[in-house]
Amino acid sequence: MATAKKSSSSKAGGVRFSEEGGGPGAPSHVHFDDKLHDSVVMVIPEADGNFLVKVGFLKIQHKYEIVFTLPPVPALGKDVCPAPMPNPHLRVTDIKLLPDGGLRVTCEYMAHQEGVLREEMLLLSESQEEACLRVRVQARVMDRHHGTPMLLEGVRCVGVELEYDSEQSDWQGFD
Image (cartoon, rainbow, N blue to C red; front, side):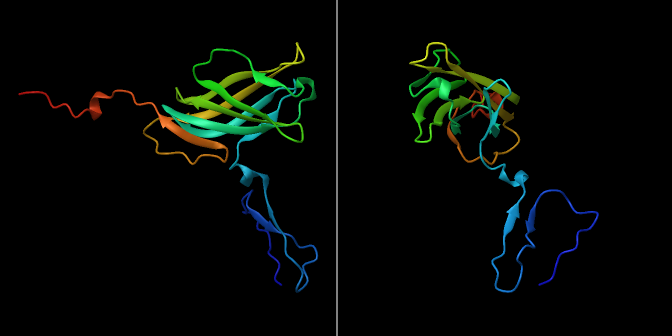
């Protein structure tokens, strides 16, 4: 079995093969660097106990269903609901308590503006009066001229909001 030599020009990230127990007939192990796990929605705990959810690249004027799992938050208890905050761009459609105590949250998001956007939702406990959790959803929204983004696992396009564009009109007028 040949061993690979590292060159000084090797790039960070990628796949590496374990050299432990590498004798003939031994199972080989493949390790993927963390940078390759960017194909799923990321839930990141913040210092204040709240969460940032990164949903990747989205396309402007498209509506998405986003599903993510939060780890257990004992302070919320078992009965959790979204706060009645009017947000025209982000709406919680379902919250399910998982057997491990975590929460599977399903929401709809309308990518309404280009750039890095953060929309906020609050989750409240129905049994603990003061308990709440802030979840910020972060998306990188591309304009309509930059193709179609590859969506992360947990993100699904559910519709397109069409705006009138005079350049794309079939109207020819009368001469």
